Image (cartoon, rainbow, N blue to C red):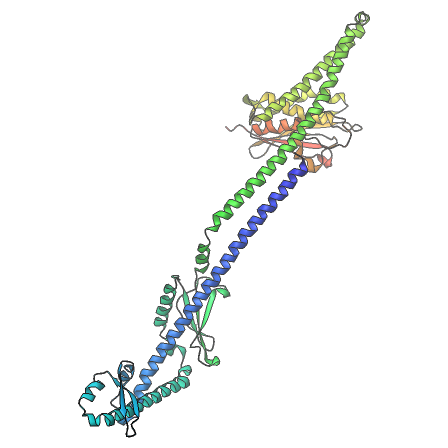
Length: 519
């Protein structure tokens, strides 16, 4: 699959996931907004009903108090009391048809109060003779009209008294806060808002005259709902009721808890897609590297094979076999090319290490200082061949480590061999091997003054098949497996390796960290 096709699929899938997440989050946001608005409207409705109930209570109180006061001003009607007025609705109604002297029929509707002090109109009429029915009916009608007008006057006086005096009283005298708390609880429960709340009453001066409880944290202004107490009071004398629900957000979020799993699954799909995309690109990169490796390996193997083939054909010539010097030279070429071919094959075999999670290690106790000294003695001739020097500085006091001696030797040989291959042609090679201790660890450094590695490639040089870009110049042959092998062996020994610039930003310095044997 072409890289552009993979990128196109990645962009499409990313856009699809982003759109899905956006729609889900937008949907959740809209639900939360709607739930919050519904919650506020329900609370406002409850507060309005509570305010109305308080008005009814105040009105009932004024009616009872003021009627008793007003009735005292009418001696001829002192037989009535507020209880009679409240029983005004329970009355009997009668209709009489009376023919006057002109022969015209008149219909009169009569009412009688049903209380312990008055008798039904039917019993009164039964006691009357037929000749007095008309006169008695007119008297009852006149009495009813007077009673009706009297009651109207009483109610008007009560209303006028309420308008003139109620708003002048302090709010704490007009409201029983315990009853207010009961009203609020009842209304909230009836509207399915059985939540803890804190309410406060604010007077006309803006001061809090009562608060039902403590508020733990500073609430958001939008979470405090306000209603006017006694809305018919003059604007300058209005009092307010404020209600705060500490668990409002939890209540609203609980309404949309069903959407949380959907968002989580979407995020899981997005993470899976991202990881899959990473694996695809990684595998494609490895595939390209392997193709480059195979092409490079084919070219590298072709050269010694061709040389050996040519040399073997030359040995068939009888003239060459008669010349000992020529025969020795051709034999030497075959021997060198055979060694070179074996080295290349060994590099290829190292790839098998990367197909397993861990290499097969034969661990044993080794003194790192002695190991490095032995390797330096063996490698010093190769360094001096190119006019260089090899210095060792064994500062580690504790140098006993538990390692595979063969693999660790190959690691150090690879690092030193790279220092020789990537030396500067016009500068004498200076190679240094050093050991020291730090935090119960053994550190080994291999430092050179070669061409160096750019800082951006310090981590990439340990990847398989990776080679530092050098343009079209390939003076040093290789497959990009050496440092990958080094890192794998070090990590299999529970150690670490890093690359950094050498002293004075010249050359490269590799630092290996290995655990010491604990006593």
